[in-house]
Image (cartoon, rainbow over all chains, first blue to last red; front, top):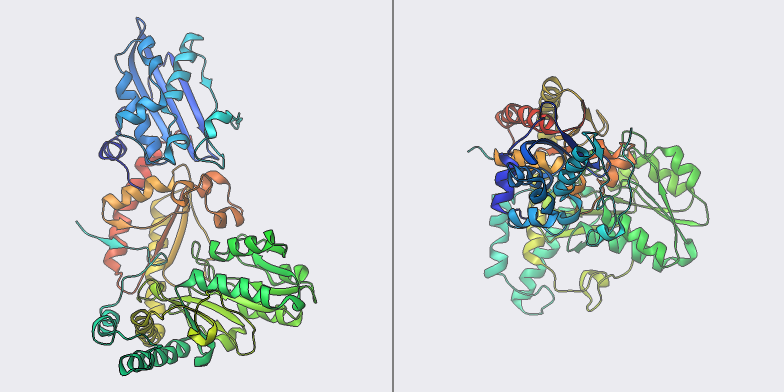
Length: 151
Length: 386
């Protein structure tokens, strides 16, 4: 399995790692059983993402996509940020190995959860990984299986 | 940058002496060992001399060795052809939950064809407890028991002698996948009491693409590859003579090294294990603390993921492996780590470091310098464990 140079760069030198002080929104997707959790915190001012930080448990693809999504939306309006998808994040990284497209490519989902949580007055929005813990690596997203996060 | 290869359970480099021994069999003595002319005779002689050396390493007779393309083929041939050829002995196969997929998937393949299969659980060290086998075995029905000699991921050595005796009492024959032990620890088929044994050359500084199946005289296995009378009608296909010669040379060298290499490897492993535990909290050893392959260190780090550890280590020239989902090619972590009772999230953080004859104390110290900050950094990035 070969990662692109951009993936390796974002993995070895991840941008925006950590936590935002008094975040306006927090989102998390994935679960530890699957081996991927992405946690994103945002600071919103005048409808713009002024600051964004992530923490991720997972493989290189999980860390690189998290890092990339934070770089892509920092300073952008919420509307612009909402247009970003897991696919555009993967494209910005010059692609991901096929098996990683679904299992470790959830950073945009985490971002959308954080925005959702901001819109709901800063309540942590925890959602569910759509593409995890499935046997078929190629089409798990369609199933949209709900996985409850441990309390 | 320093380069430390510490993944010898995956494969080993070909020993230069082995390579030298093989070379003439590609160019000067290139004959087909089945040919009648002098080129063929020379190749044939090399084949039979090699068979003696490989047989000697495991205490077998020369006519009990069948050369195959490797451990996987040997496992397939042993299990599939024995079950098909011995229908009257029974329809039931027993194996364990921590086998290599070459055994596990082969047994599952037979189960789909209508054979009965029992997959034995293991204890938290990854050992098949003799009583577990005793309870599962059914005299008259169980034809074959297949338990690996040592596990490739966690290094645990199985109580083969005891397990084989239980199989024999119940009238079953015993196969062991000894790919991880042959050449690393003393392996003697008579002492272990096994009827079938698989081995592979590339784990003991031999070439890839060559292995063997030991089949005790009188154990009726059959041909798995069809199309010729090679290997006493048990393995069709032009014999890989250079590979066989390399396997034999590797076996010869392994035998010379056996006594002298075990203790230094165990010392290095201890130094590495102790160093890891001293520097990195929330770590656990997987596999048996003592009854394990010399030089094998397998651990799990909480809150981090294995592939990330491997790529970070590789960035510092350290080449190791992991049983995390991302490295297994599936979405689940290693079946071995789950079978010893680890939760998924712990199994994702596995790291396997397997030392070989050329690893040094400096290698260990370098790993101990590089690994702890990597785990610390990845943990700082992880939302788990706080």
